[in-house]
Length: 206
Length: 206
DNA sequence: CCGGGCATCCACCGATCGGTGGAGCGGAGA
DNA sequence: TCTCCGCTCCACCGATCGGTGGATGCCCGG
Image 1 (cartoon, rainbow over the protein chains, first blue to last red):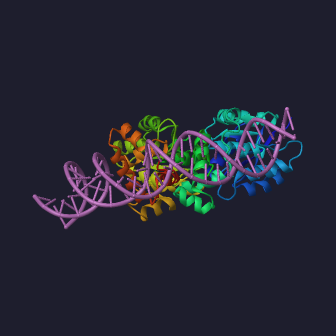
Image 2: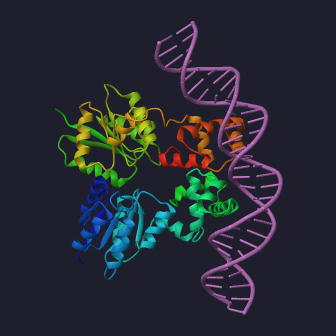
Image 3: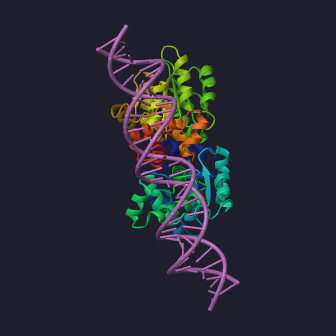
């Protein structure tokens, strides 16, 4: 049986070096390519045809999620698999990554052995999920959904506009603005507008 | 001349591995210790007496800033020097690290050569600053500063507490809470509490 | 077909917030 | 030493917000 071929995508050189180092010591796993942004990773993947891609999410020159979506669309026989490896475990990041087609989601504080096991599991076709990601999936499935209008309103709230100003901006009545806000409060479990802004910001909704 | 002895402090095993790997290839620099939290790093530093400490800031088991403050207080002849190595370049993180006595501030997207040069500069007594950190220092010096009390209040606002509830929690009058908030509004250029929460969150103040 | 669920819309009231004006107190610099 | 500045503290008022109670139109599935 041949070695598992992987590509490492991360904007931080140190992290890339750390990852390649981890797998250099590991028999049966070869790092065959690196990239520092989502778009550039696609070329590397096309060239090297890896079994698993380790993908960071937030990168200055191009996010990881679109790259995952793209590589999933073009892969044959399920290769390569996409393993998200990120610092953050926010609702939105996890959802968008998994929706894009990621086969695994690990946090960067994972240990070396966890990481190696994740890569082997993925190469064998077993999906991998960090506890936080699993909790998100099992927990509230449709709870966090805010309507587009509610997000419009909340965004303006976060900019410091009053309800009346928001109403004018969106060409609706002030009462309507309040209704939207009250709905967001109950959906988010927020006590008031300030709390709602914090929660939304925390989850990356605005 | 003897090798530069360094200790690496970061909660992510991968990052630690990456850093030790970078310096393993580098003659004249020895990694003599590692730690995964601020408090635990102090013991390692006491044991190994390094010349330079590479310190992450945000760590679950204990932040880097208090550790820097502590090691600065106990060092002799300026050793060890503290080099902050973090993902974030927010106002507050940079300020608090430099106030604590850090001799250098680098972002994790630094290249290997930048990193090696930074360690050599620090060992030679030359301070090291990432462009972002330098900009912060040169720019607005006292503008973004919120008092500790103001941050206390704003944190509770972000949790959705009313002014009265905050007053009770902090054992002060509701009027005082409002005063603190009004001050934060003018300092941050915020229109109301929701806006202030957003700005603070954006800048990493809470 | 029709009823439930959802997004969107609106008016009124009590509670809360934003803003003004002011006071004491301690540290930094003249 | 004394002054100045910023942090902390407080009371009062008008403006705004949170909450209740409803209404409309739309889509989807029974």
